[in-house]
Each structure stands twice: as C-alpha cells, then as structure tokens.
Image (tube, rainbow, N blue to C red; front, side, top):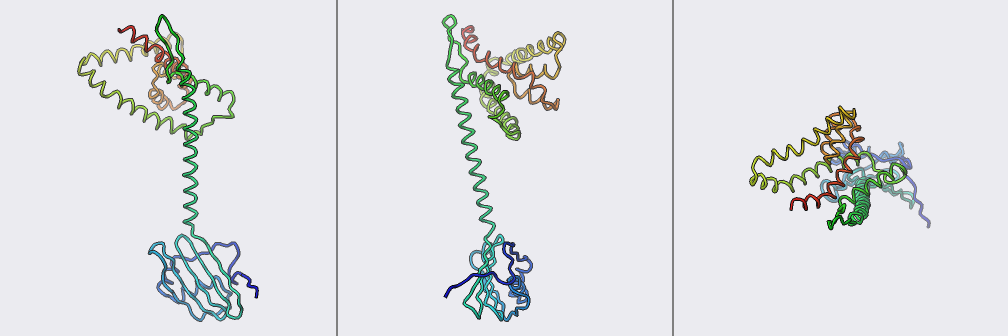
Length: 305
C-alpha cells in the first residue's frame, strides 16, 4: 500500500508557524483550552477535540522541547515546541493509513551559520589584506636595499623609505586607474584613527626609556634644545610661506606637518579645520621628509663621529 504525505487542513504551505509565548505558558501549566488552541491552527474548524494534554519537556530547561498530545474525532496529533521558534507537528488520521508532518527548524541554527559566515569572511579579508601589505613591504624592502656610495659612505632609502616610495607609486596608479586597490571609507577611518593612536603609543613606549635616561644625564638643557630644534624650522616655514609665498594657511600648516613627518599634527589640523584640505600640503613634504630622514641618517652619524 502506498503512503502519501499531506498537510493538515489548517496549515498553509510556506507560512511561518507561531505559538504566542503567553499561550505556551498556559499550555505548559496543562491548560486544556490553551493546548487545544495551539492544535486548532493545524486542523479544520469543524474538527472536535476530545483530549489534549501536556506531556512534559525533553532536554535542558532553557533549550528544552515541550511536548503536547491531542486526540480529535479524526486524528491523533502531537506537537513539539522548542527554543527560537522550533516547531514539530505530526498527526495520524484514524480512518486512513495516512499521516502528515510539519517541521519548522530552530532559528538558532540560522544565527550560528550567519555568525560563522561573518567570521570566515573576516578571516579571509584579514589574510588577503595581510598578503597585500606584505607584498608592498617586500617590493619596498627590495627598493630600500639599493644603496649608493658617496665618498665611501653608503646611502640607501632603507626598508621604510622603500615602502614609502612604493606606496607613493601605487597611490598614483590608483589615482590614474581607479579600478583596483579601493579601500572603503570606514576602513580608512579605522586606519586613520586607531592605527595612528597605536602608532603614537608604540613610539611613546619605545622612546620613553631613552628620554628619561637622556634627561637624567643632560638635565633640562635637552628639553630646551629639543624645543628649539622642533619649533624653529616650522616657525620659519610658517612666516616664509604666509608672507612671502602667500600660501593658504590651512595648506601651509599641512605642509609643515608633512615636513616634520608628523601624522598626528595633520590629524589635529584636520579636526580643527573640519576639512581634508590640509592633506594637499601634507603629502609631498611628508614624502621628501621621510626620504631625507632615512637617506641622511648615516651622514649625520658620520659627521658626529
């Protein structure tokens, strides 16, 4: 004999099943009227319910499945209600060897799959981004290995200078061919704020011991000389750029921040001006300043010996 599966009379194909929490609480107290009302959504209006009972809970207290049974003039039915909307209804008709089942899975599994997909996407993005950064560093590192001998003194860009040059090259290529290398604005904001804060913190942690030790050895004169060396070039640049070159003040401040290779100063200028215009004056002096710092470091060391 062939068996066929049919939906109960009250069930709508494709519709989400729902049991109100208040109704479920009453049904768990073995309220016959509440249990019958839960079963009626699967049955025809003219079907008469003879018996309805709460059979208990399977599993843990929070994630347990509550079981109910019902007997009508046409069928014997069972209903299981679990956590996160899980429902399992099955019945068997009394006059036929026929039965039907409706199963709605728990949304918890859907949530877990979504979380796993997001974590997988973040991991893949992190690996891809790390590989791109490593490739950029590798190319810049090869460029930084190149050196030129001047009077027996080897001059090179070093790995950091080479990475800067390759960054300028790829940045220019991105401006000419904007079909690759796009970074979303939220990601740029994270790099600009969180990355800068971490960078400043790391610089402070690295320079702190040497600063304290140098201050103990030389006294306050080190602070005075440091202030003079740091302030004088920028003061001269501001006066010359404003009154001789007639530069825009915002762009001039960005140029001074770039010449000092001080990204934190650029950020402060942008926040105060509430504009990205200072970047126009920042980029070229920043590149030149980094190149000169890395290339002329050995020269300064040689002159002090």
